[in-house]
Image 1 (tube, rainbow, N blue to C red):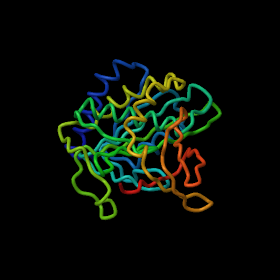
Image 2 (image 1 turned 180 degrees about the horizontal axis):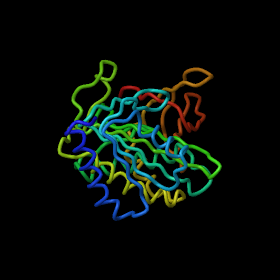
Image 3 (image 1 turned 90 degrees about the vertical axis):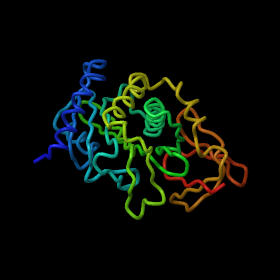
Image 4 (image 1 turned 135 degrees about the horizontal axis):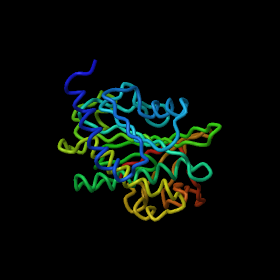
Length: 263
């Protein structure tokens, strides 16, 4: 049974989203939860149950919020925006790195519009304020007999001021308690939707590059061949990270986790 505070989140968020992006995009489905395991998981269940179309899913808290590489995403109630955008791929399966990069710019723009705060993007899916991670993005795809669906899961720490031990030195927040989760979800959707309609449009790439916190810096990553180091020198039109190796050769990273070496 939902508490009064929880039911207020669902009703106020549903009302706000319906009156804003619901009117702007009448074919958009909107679902709001007080608590759920993961909005990405719920989007997958919707597809399995036969849902078709585009949907925005928002939760006050997640009991099993997920990040990339199997990590969890801390999702306490009343202090963050946790939402997923589910949509049918309009072309052949969009590459996850490109979708995630576009979503990063959309969230960066939404934060700027709502708070005036300028954040930076850590390739490929995290937003940082200073040295603290304040947002993460997880893109997943499902292929069914009816077609391919893409799920973009987004978490933004709006005013979270306490984190579990393993995150205490890494995660941070925007310190924006007056911004609601519904406002953040609506603005991020509004910024991302043009790309969903036209994945070939890469006009956002300039902003993705200019707001990168990794370009020009030494980075490290691991793969099946071991651990590697190099200098991040560019981001190509597919969203791949271009890294110059110590031997002068250049490699392209399409996925994986990088760490940025201290300046």
